[in-house]
Image (cartoon, rainbow, N blue to C red; front, side):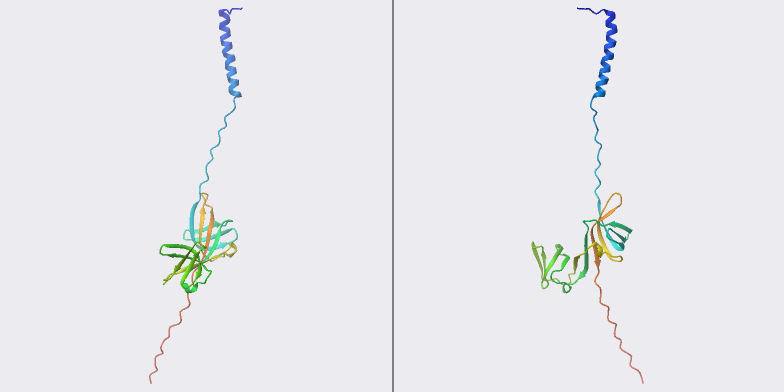
Length: 196
């Protein structure tokens, strides 16, 4: 067995340290890199915005609505629902089968008219509401529309989703038809009698 002399020890220790350091560097370089996953930011949820005004233009994909806040462009999407609503109808103007939107004491919603006297509203085979004393109650008749039914000049209310980038997508489009008032008959005047 060979013995190591002190001179050799002084030379071996630095050489051994260099080898170990080099090996350590190789281990670090050969170690698998830890990939950090990029943080994904959740897309901001759109805000709900309802706009009421008049259509200044309308086509199959977009409507422009002139409202109090100015003109707004709203995209029409596949899921957009379209409704025509005739407001302020009296019971005598309703007929069986009409879908009506109403607000009564403790009740609000849409239902089909099942009978008119007394007024009976049917909620999709779930419940029936009979109104005996309707008095001056006004109803809104609701019918389905399609995008092609939208035209310039119509009064409308659009429930939409407002995205952070400013784009708006329509959830529901309500074309509002106000009742037409019958023209008033001219007042009769009594002609003054001619004096002799």
